Image (cartoon, rainbow, N blue to C red; front, side, top):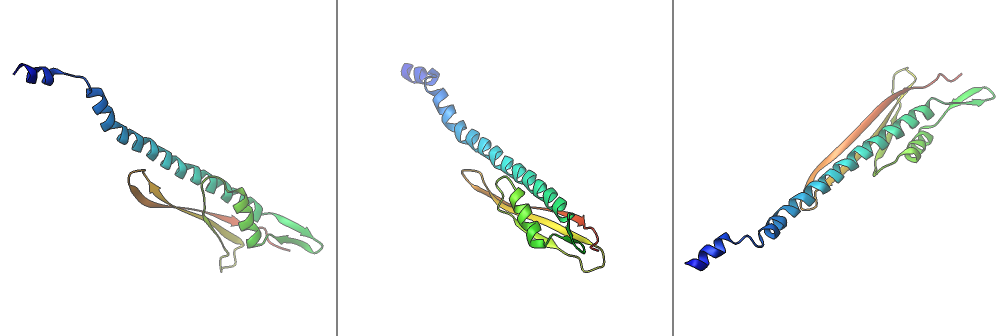
Length: 137
């Protein structure tokens, strides 16, 4: 009976067991923070690309007869060049059918969250900006 009491009061190895139980949870939380920071970084890159694309879409290239606007392909290329972060997004430039001289620039980014021990949901970020272009004369 004396040995059972001694084993019950023995604290050797308790810290190692607690460490082994908490480390996977701690690593998952830290990795999850890293995954969410990737989303914020991608969002900042998308916003920057939209701003640069909007600025580029409003430029008027001087010609002999007036000015020409940048093409949708050139605007997409400029947005792609200015994009930063972990973004493999898709770009669209839409020209409205009404008489207004505007374009809608859109960037979409999709990422499946990975929390090391399990896969999280798929998150889609979409940012748009309406750009009013100068009238071509």
